[in-house]
Length: 484
Image 1 (cartoon, rainbow, N blue to C red):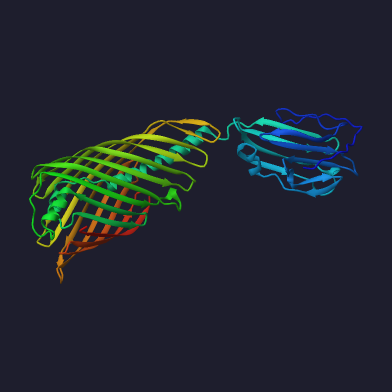
Image 2 (cartoon, rainbow, N blue to C red):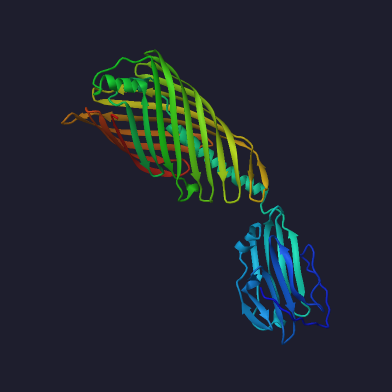
């Protein structure tokens, strides 16, 4: 910092006040300012005035070792130095610094200069948002400005609440869609299929235009069937009791995420009991985890659960009714550039479907499915807080989806050489997602399964999805299963 030992006195004396200041200091007149210091947070503002005159003028405004505007006057000469930066103000103990404006020595002479100083808005440690200004204004007389004006909140509570609810609502709604598309409990059809299994577990990976899904599942019935008959060539008597586990992992991208990718995973387990060949009841538990970044430099994440009973009945020859009722909740976190918080939810899901599994002939099957699923999730009142310890209470809300769909898949098996079979298939599903859903939706799928008698198979397919809000996605699927 520059130090001056001389002082120049003036005959003129003036007094003025800065209209926008909470308080203003007297302008400099007969007594010059010689290296006076004003505390600013943990730093000091150094001010100096000696002059002005046509031939002599010296003035500066410094924040520690940085000059306002990056220059100062000395004997009507301009000298350069480091300019004040936002990071330096923050280092003095301020947050939410904005609006930094500064001006140093201009061309000409100090007598013709208009303004030397700086101003900004920030929140001091333990304080409220405040606008600050330290400056010399005018040449004759010269007014010294030192002002601290409360700036009020740097946010609009209504706008923040609306923004938070938009983020939370989008997070909850997309998670509902993921849950609806990935959650499964085994019914009588699956029980009979796995009783002839050649593999103790199955897995698949499904990439698409909006994500990638990986799945692995197994059950006690499937393990026992594979152990009894590794070729899966003979029917196995159904066990009355079954324990199963299923896992799904998904990478996803949506419009609100920009170029950021999120993830969703679900692990499900349960147990069921066969009352008869035509009736099954069980209990299931489902845990899910979701991470959802957005293009607004925010990330939401959450852990949730669902649990409840399910049942499956054969109501006609090759016609099955599957239904489940699940209740649960979730704990979630919000992290943005400014606001952080958490919220809890309560949710339940009713899922019911009529399934068919019909053989048109020895090598051709058709599997129609009519499904209705209702999901409701209530977000409890929650709180967000910023770095200035501002706290906002935000009211909760409920998000609902009612999804009804009908689809069918037809498949035909062809026997190849070396004990291989090839089964092409074609599927079409259409439906409507009401309430907080996106309206009409549809899916077209096509693919084939290549299977050997040595307990391995390859399942591939193409998917085209169209949502009612205009979103379209396409992708491919490949599934590989075998004994482990």
